[in-house]
Amino acid sequence: TRLTTHLHSLPILSISAIDGFAIGGGAELTTSTDMVALSRRSKIQFVHAQRGASMGWGGGRRLVKKVGRSRALRMLLLGECVLGEEEAKSATYADAVASEGETALDAAMRLIVNPILDLPCAKSIRAIKSAVSSADGDRDVLDYIDGTLQSNNLALRGERESFLSVWGGDTNVEQIRKAKERLKDKTKTT
Image (cartoon, rainbow, N blue to C red; front, side, top):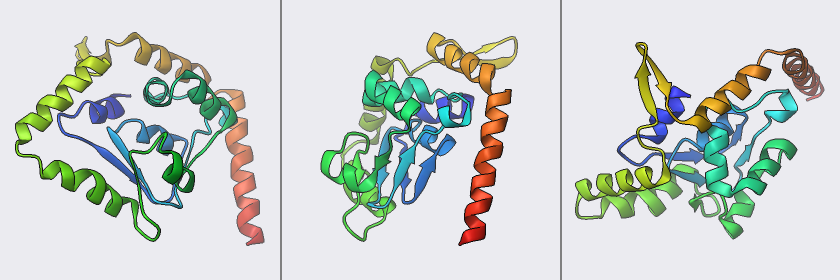
């Protein structure tokens, strides 16, 4: 939680550029950046429920902010995916989608980074990021308590407690074992 919250709270813009699959923790990491760029072949999927787990890095809270409560529940419980090809038409998750044959990084540079770099004042960019983070409730969500960095945000604390209640439990361990077996079987047949 600390790393993803720090990433989300950076005074500069952060961008996820996804060319392949961002599954589970990788999907959760995409919620930690300010913007997301996808290639046409990319896929983002939260598989926590299928693994008997829950989000533990603040991704649930950020996902709800990004896509709304109903879609977040569909993505988290039913495994609804974000596909780059579909985002090219709807742009409901991604901030930039690559053109055919273009990488997500190239799209991020062309559609996000270069236009921002053309702005006249870096201080202005940081001030805007800070103002948006404050309005969004994402600023100052970490505190040092008893010498350790902890969240003072109840939503982050609740998500962490939910995660800890299932991570490493019988269902979680069994589902991970089954996923490993399926992957092993799949690699044997190819």
